[in-house]
Image (cartoon, rainbow, N blue to C red; front, side, top):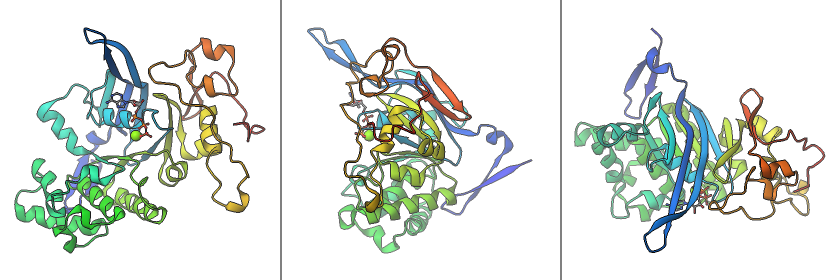
Length: 354
Ligand SMILES: Nc1ncnc2c1ncn2[C@@H]1O[C@H](COP(=O)(O)OP(=O)(O)OP(=O)(O)O)[C@@H](O)[C@H]1O
Ligand SMILES: [Mg+2]
């Protein structure tokens, strides 16, 4: 029987049999909605909904890094938190390793929680300022029964701290004694302490200096290879996404409007929104930078009042009457490359139209 071997940071090898390999997707969201109701009036009735996630289907394959990109407020974090079952979807189904986890709670949800961890933009948010690094790392091991004794937890913490590029002396210190980059290394170590398979990385380097960003991104890549991790990588920075991801999903006002392999998205974007985002990325070579970089114009409409038909139409230069009337179909324009647009637009002569 075919088996794969997973090496965790404890050095333990776990064998998985072919049965577990059947699902090539580790994480899957099927037609997921997350609406936040707005209450008002005398009786506190729902008067409107913030449609943060508005019908998203996405699958993340084992071992890959899926990028999730989009402007602020497009629903990236909400989608990530819904997938992790940190918040309940309004509608839709979430699968983890082939199992429908949408309605799990209590103990059975806890089992899956261990397998899914999260790293935020701000490591302060995930680290308790009064807790030493040692206890920040060993506490989740205890909660999830990863280590059977204090000694084993301490040994694991010692290995783990070195795995993320720090040393054992750091275990007795507190979060404020570290630089931003070091703190993010600790937050990563804490996420890995429970030996997860899936890690949601929500803007993990956005608050760091550029030089430190690169180190953390490289560390994340190394850890992914070493521990066979699957990532959902959220960022509004397309250069970072390009560096990190195998596939990319582009989110606009609660929907994924385009998804495909990294190369396809970057070299031949098909949705006008993706094209606009890419056009807004400054050229890294200053000599090639145009005087006025094209930028995406206009504000993102409110997720409380989403435009009819195609939700991007109010900012789209290709907008027609049909776009206001009809919801755009999701079309697979080449294998694995999906676009939600009425038209197959050729952007070759439109480089600067945004
Ligand atoms: N708990 C909540 N209650 C009400 N509205 C919320 C809640 N959480 C998020 N929203 C709204 O949902 C929308 C999507 O927010 P979300 O944080 O998911 O966006 P994002 O893409 O992660 O943005 P950013 O890039 O700024 O992090 C926003 O309009 C936000 O105000
Ligand atoms: Mg966010």
